[in-house]
Every structure is written in structure tokens, then in C-alpha cells.
Length: 294
Image 1 (tube, rainbow, N blue to C red):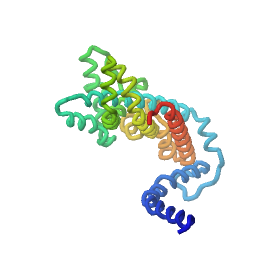
Image 2: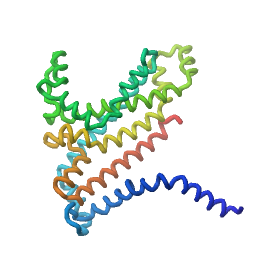
Image 3: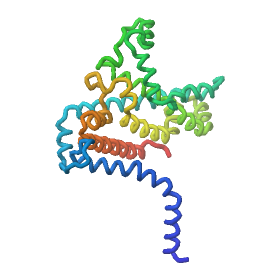
Image 4: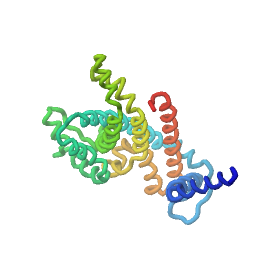
């Protein structure tokens, strides 16, 4: 069998194993993205069977809309506000659960349970917790002698409230991955560090953090992408308010498309969100070459 035949056979084998996964990805991911890109150059109102090509008019209107720039700022604040605590608290919980605790498997289940619970259900419960009168959050603040807050009913604290819910849900996911990563670090490194007199913080800085860097990179990408496309908790808790203080780009797309029936402008917002997501992911991949210890 010559080289050409071997190459063709190899291509057929690859296609045989990848097509079952590629077909739904093309149908439900790539095709909608391309369709959204095309719609962003049209004036489709979501109701009419036909639409016209308008060029870059939707992008011009989007960049001149103050709501877009406010949503961009809110999206950045929300992404940063969820990314850092999720990583930090997830690692802290993993280090705690790695120690010799009785019933550790039960604690692991309790920590991970918010992640497998539907976001809508969690958000409904938290909307009760954040009630200004009689809510658990304000009751706890009162017990500690702190001033009560309006939480989701105030533009000053609404975004913080959504961030708290998102972080609370995502910590368990990060914790489980970190537990697996911590178990893979050779114990000989810690033993050698102990012989050299290294304490907890030095071992954490020079052994643990470099050892789990691939997991940290993976979680940073996943957490950032999830934050950029967050919608359910915002819809249930605040509906993008008050006064647009929790209106992210994803929620702005919903309002443009399904409230104002400007699907072309909504698609332009989606294209911008995709470009931002891809750009941030590429930056993270670029930085990972310098700090991920493979």
C-alpha cells in the first residue's frame, strides 16, 4: 500500500470517528453563529418573513447606543467579579477538603451540589434570601450589627448580588477540579520542602500553585466564558436592572431581539460578544505558555 492510500485511509478513519460529534456541532453551534453573523447585516425584525441587507448600519447603531457601552462595562465587571473569587475560594475549599476530615465525601457532595442544581431554581431561592424585609441576608447582617442592604432592588448592590449567586454556584465546580489536581502532585515534593523547613505558605507558593497551574488555566477559561454568557440568574434576579446596572451583553441581546424586535442589532451584539470571548481566550492561551507548568 503506497503513501497516498495510507493517507486516504487515515483521513477516512479520522472522519469516521469525528463525524458523529461534528454533525451536531455544525448544526447547533457553527451554523447558528454564521447565521447570526449574516443577520447582523440585515434589518430583520424577527416577525417579517423577509429582510433587507443594511451593511454595517446595525454596528454603527450599536456603537452609538449608550446601553451597549454600559453593558460592556457591566459584563467586564461581572466577569472579573466572578472569575477571581471562584478560583480563589475553589482552591481554598479544595485545600480544606484535602485534609483528613471525617465524612469528606459528604462535604464534597454539598460543595458540588449547587453546580448541578438548575440556575433558575438557585436564583429563585436567592431572590428570597435577598429580600430587603425578612430576607436571610439582611437578617445575618443585622445579627452582626451591620447596616441592611437593598440587594437586588438597588443599582448599587444589584450586580454584587448576582456575582454572589454566580460565585456560590461555581465554587464547587472549581473545587472538584482542584481536588483532582492536588492529588496528582507528588508527595515527595512536600516532604522535601518540609525537610528544608518550608512552611504552609511557601509550599503553597512554590509547589501547590505551580503544580495545579494547568487546572487553573482550564478553570480560568471556563469561568470567564460562563461569566460572559450568563443570563439565567440575571433574568430571574434583576431583569437587567435596576437602571441597567446588571444588563450584560447577553441580556442586551435578549432585549434587542425579543423585546424591541431588532434582531439585526441583536445579532451585532452577539457578534461583538463572540469576538470579545475569542480575544480573551486567545490572550489566556498566550499567557498560559508563560505560567502553566505542563
